[in-house]
Image 1 (spheres, rainbow, N blue to C red):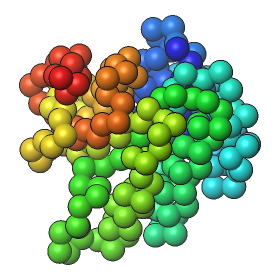
Image 2 (image 1 turned 45 degrees about the horizontal axis):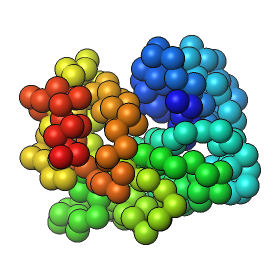
Image 3 (image 1 turned 120 degrees about the vertical axis):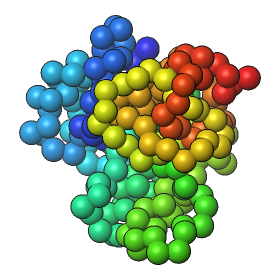
Image 4 (image 1 turned 135 degrees about the vertical axis):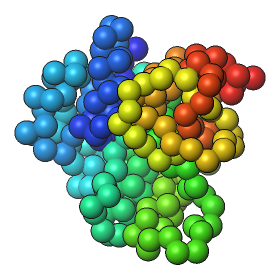
Length: 217
């Protein structure tokens, strides 16, 4: 398949690009800065420079022509303030969904976060609370034109992949490696039965392929 990834230079995105390109998929990585292009080429992806905070729906849709699925992996990052949580984690996600619909791309996977859509606990960092709300406001559920799937990982680590996870509409508390998130995203891309579903993800004991099959059933 041909897959376009927004936030193509992100840590999960680069991992996913390597996995998809290694198995023969065509991967387009959408990035904000041209100096990131070499890293995408090394990962096997075609870099496309397009700033989702400034582009129009038509601009982005033009880059999605012939794409079978998109993955929204962009994020303002932990060092950003509340304003960029809104312009990236909410507005850019909505823009990317609008562009996917305009380009006729059927599949849309969004990386979100565990706890999105629930009331933040007392004492939550205010900027992180804005992030949670921004992700919640980038809601795909009313979009009949997209076969959307939302993945909500727990806290991310850089531990090597285990290939074993817990994936369900609700999971216990726990973290998960970025490597394993990328493996799950690849498996979700291959499973049309996950359309219209939201899944939480943490490390676990179930092989990724089995976890995805079980989540669908």
